[in-house]
Image 1 (tube, helix red, strand yellow):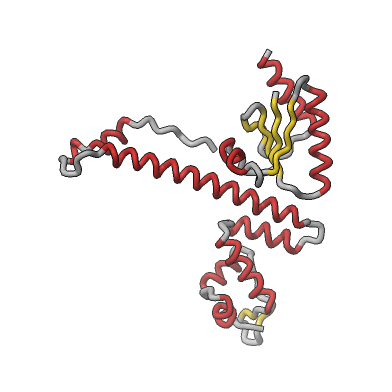
Image 2 (tube, each protein chain N blue to C red):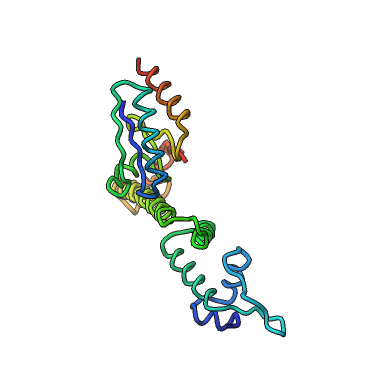
Length: 86
Length: 139
């Protein structure tokens, strides 16, 4: 599973939140690829996926969250999707 | 202090637009003259220029109101404003992509129209539009 977080470099609080989400995702799903993408470096790809607000999270190339999820929301979404793949 | 007319000429904005901005909570007079006329100061002129520039960058008045709140908030950081600017760019890029797709669709319709002298009931563009299974955009 590939999780991509689109972000715009900002405050230190956001960096801490990203780290918490990354840890949660890696604990929830095995063999997970986690990418953090500066949206300005990946603008075409972000527009292609429909990213309009930040941060946004795509899973396997599909936009899942269009704002910062809670740790619990991300964990639930990833576990649900990994079940669907089995 | 300036009257509304003076502020209008300083910022190249009409009196009506200034009243509209005031109605929308974007700018407010710094005071009133003894005769009851609205009076504005240099900060009002700065705000008007800020609003105009932000409009030129594609921000709506509602978004500009948020930016003005951020501008005056002690705890807001530059990153908050930058994120809003980046989100606006994403929206504009998305619209450009949608417009290009529309333009391409029109190219195809125009190219399919081999004979512009045909009667309208044989028009290939109209026929193509009637056949089209238009997808509803997802928001």
